Length: 207
Image (tube, rainbow, N blue to C red; front, side):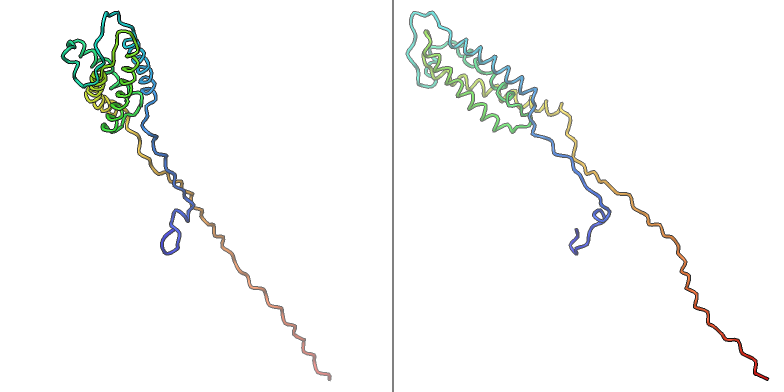
């Protein structure tokens, strides 16, 4: 409908315009299932490592000061703490299944979730014989997750976006109605004949 109140040509001809729906949110289901399966397997392995009892004669006191245990820890122990939850830097975003997620919110979500998991594992391990509460274990585990996420996830997402086919842009489909041609039949108008006049024959004069 135009401003002057008249209909457009498509409206007069009965045409309709249909558009295709926009593509759904970029959540890859197969990647999500793989991420959830890998996350479950890795957490099971991590629980087995931190909750198994250690046959030791004595243990250190609980450490609540960050980086205070570096003097009494070996290099392999520090590397092991870094690698304990490092795969979560890839598995947590993979479990989300989002290929086109912004890097900063994804990084913050991964760091927060890994901090919660590392804290829970550390508190559980403190009840196991041979383990004590150490805040450095939490710190090193979260740092390993953050480094892994920044090193691998942005590049993997870019690679997946390049491999996936580009979605088609919605296009308008116009359904046109064939024009109806009017058949003009020539008509002949015949005027009605006038009523004939009646003329009287002249009568001859009487002789």
